[in-house]
Amino acid sequence: MIKIMSHILMDHIRSLSTGRRAFGAGQHVFNQGDDVASLYLVESGVVHLVRHQTDGDVAVLQRASPGLVLAEASVFSSVYHCDAVAVTNVNATSVPIKSIRHALRGNPDFAEGWASYLSYQLQQTRKRAEIASLKTVAARLESWLAWNDGGLPSKGEWRALADDIGVSPEALYRELSRRRSSFVRDRP
Image 1 (cartoon, rainbow, N blue to C red):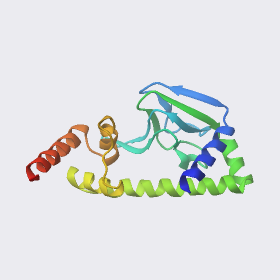
Image 2 (cartoon, helix red, strand yellow; image 1 turned 90 degrees about the horizontal axis):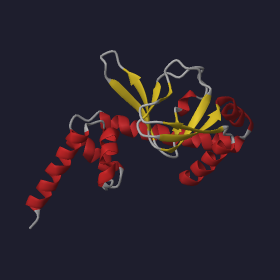
Image 3 (cartoon, rainbow, N blue to C red; image 1 turned 90 degrees about the vertical axis):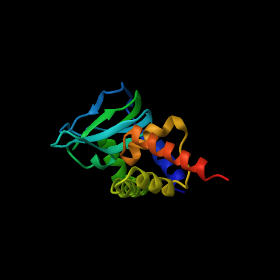
Image 4 (cartoon, rainbow, N blue to C red; image 1 turned 30 degrees about the horizontal axis):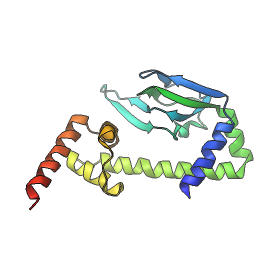
């Protein structure tokens, strides 16, 4: 049901679009402090919503991939509270924020779909926070696997998995190698 509602919601968002925008890897979609003028639906590529910490670290608040709305919590804000940076080349549907606000106020089906989408995104954020609270790479990976029916993504998506669980790709590769070695030793 969530997928159907999400698909309908995304189609509605596209219908309000004023066009598509392309961003190169490393390019900012928007910056912290910019006026919220548009909502972006990622069509291809990956965008990170980031906040720079006082110690120089960067906190990734959202990893928006195809089919996800970037910075959905900014709909009723006047300015963005973080930066949005294209990690890869990105194509996004751009929708004036006024159109989204108008649809939320005037279309109960759109508002319900939006609430459902936000609820799902909140659940995903809590899941990522739970995983990030774990101390070891092994524990984070184990938790991620539990949330995802025990299956690893394809090898080409392991960097994204490392991002998702908040570890370096190298640390994830070492843990996967350790597990593979352990599995081979434990086989009869």
